[in-house]
Amino acid sequence: MKPLQRKYEALKKILQEAYLGKENAEVGEQWQLHVMRRIRNLGPVQSGPSFFMLFEQFVWRLTPATCLLIIVGAIIFLKLGFFPDYDVLTLFINNAEELSLAQLF
Amino acid sequence: MRNQLTKPSDAEIIRRIIDGDANSFEHLLKRYQDYVLRIVTKHIPYNEVEEMAQEVFVRTYQALPGFKQEGSFRQWLSAIAVRTCYDFWRKRYRSRELPMSDLTDSHQSWLENTLSNQSDKSFHEKGREKEARELLDWALSKLSARDRMVIELVYLEGLSVKEAAGLLGWSVSNVKVRSFRSRKKLETLLKGVISA
Image (cartoon, rainbow over the protein chains, first blue to last red):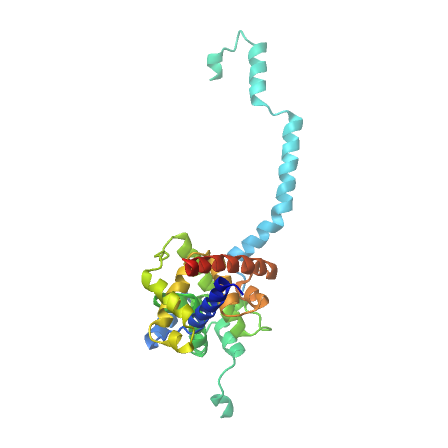
């Protein structure tokens, strides 16, 4: 084994010992009281699914229907020819005498 | 009479809490306080341990309705504790509040002495562990929060990849890959210190 690798292995062992040898932190009764105060402030736990969980479930369930609606809407728009700029220009060309640009805006 | 003397089981306490008796949580708190503190102390700096251990119990309380009785409560609690520690480091790394001090000459001389004289006595002498921990903290602060947790669980605590994956809630392959990479990073860092 190379000297560097040997030194590294030794250091690794030392660091592992240092990590595992950390003294356990101790807490007093005040700490317990503080935790329980926080718990009581939270109130009773919810046993059923929360509003957000239900909402999330419904959102995902509605995703295919929403996608379908968007596709159908896009097809309808394309079929009907909903091009406002084109329509205004056509109107202006056909009725140039009655319709001036000033009226348009 | 005998039933009154026996302590309620975890399942019984959990049922009471879910039924609305928040005070019953005190039983779980007293029963698992030392266990949670042991986990948190390993991963978090001493001055933050109390706060983080509190956070673990608050999260546990809030997550109790989702606890599946088939598994052990102790194991479930340890996963919450480890994930809370991981979140702590993620926040720390994001806000760049890490102590990024470089190694001092005393660390360097300690390292040389320790590596040239590797008896147990020299390591356990007063102050030796402190310097070893400082060196370890320095090396871990150079890694990401994810790498740090994997190194601590797999490399330093000696848990299996599967156990670490269960605690962190990651896939086994993710932990395996990350464990390999983070070990290489740590090795490069420490070899750099040794050869300096």
